Picture 1 (cartoon, rainbow, N blue to C red):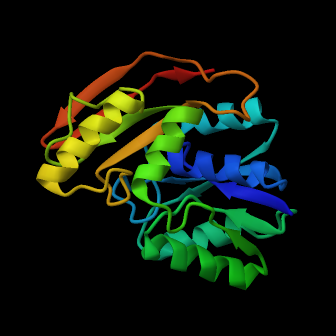
Picture 2 (cartoon, helix red, strand yellow):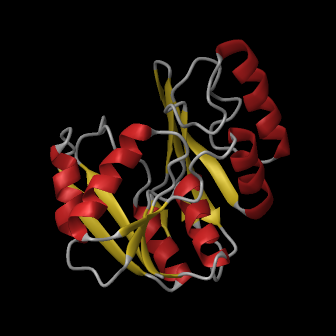
Length: 218
């Protein structure tokens, strides 16, 4: 199938693209919805400028869809941004979020597209383990008790997974971050021609929320 991918540049959507390619599908577009509202229900807002560089590394077309980020209205904005793309289906990185999956499925039904969600129902341990073994993915936002300087800005590897599992036992977090406990950014994946570079790293903590941002990607 010819597919487009909905991605914020995080580990789940990038892993979903990799699995689509592994399955023999063609992925032609990376689509990023950019919300003005930093508290968007559906879409991440951190370091989205990296996705255009990822698309270049992957030889895919980059599509940016602006939205105010208001609940439900942002889904309509996404739908209109996807309408007319030359694609047969949409790749999403949802693991267990019915909120995300149901809304993407509704958009795809309206547009006559298939949904490709290869991570759906995967065990969280399996997701983070595959990310660690196949990608350079780093945590760029933390928003849960027990997660902060111990993981922020660090690559998801075996040691970081051990930290996440230890926090999971104490705080009952979702170790793949599906509950919003953290967000990630991918710097390299098997389908990239070369790694994404970044400069101007800044780390900010506001209460429980920690964020890493970069001035420029190339």
